[in-house]
Length: 354
Image (cartoon, rainbow, N blue to C red; front, side):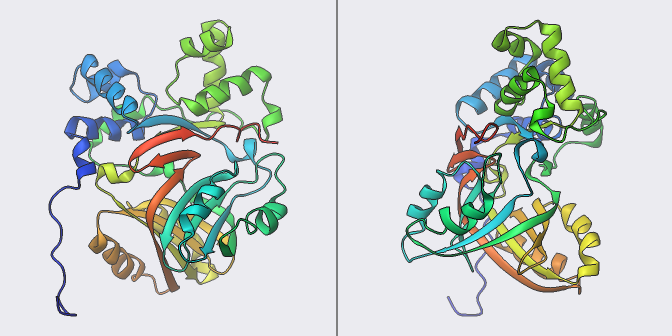
């Protein structure tokens, strides 16, 4: 192939994408929008039968392709804002280092990357964590690490649960939104503000975002009405947000890329809004460090990423530099380990750490 030859764009599906058919994809899209929608309502909205929807949900869960969990609001589990950490390793030691890092309860997400770093991870200062010791001692002292660079998240504009597979009609989306729980109550500011019953229910909902009041009642030995009031209070206060865990590769977006952007300070708020609403956006944040913003996006292929960099980012002269790292493997996302596209165990202990 000559230097000027462009490889043909791939048109066939990857093997992972063939694990889901159109019914599965509609179901995933519906759950991303309204994760707690009952099976009967999902069937009606998607023009299917309850038995089909129930069977598909069971298969996706049993084959470890999809899980609905709960994202706990930051102030309830952290003492300050998270860090995004970039790690360089000695040659040939990235995987070894990554598996040592996975032992840290504070590490929420971890990717093996190419570019200016070998590993990218997000670190949450959980209750009981000495973040200074973690970033300057515990993490850098792992054998095989050459250097680390951490950036404090100042504003998290867009997070993983916001990313959507856009394939449903507006009418279906509107009907699904009727099954969401908008925040209508005062948001708790610490874990200690919750009652013991709310704390126990929160743990159950973090592990299973679709858990019913009947199941909570059975697990906690309380009445169904009490379980319902408790779970609704947690949802309506924003203490917990149900979210779908599924690898974007299954949905046709196999390319994970992290773009570190240097931006003119006065342009950051508007750019957060613009990039945060981009279809690729999984995690868009303003950070304190060597750069101004991080855009973590998922893309269909290299051409999709190239177009985003040259066209979407290129349209903003206030962006002065772009440094891109590409993920070669996702090992953990939202405290849930990954084995390719299949979900592993969810790291426990992050709610009551320390």
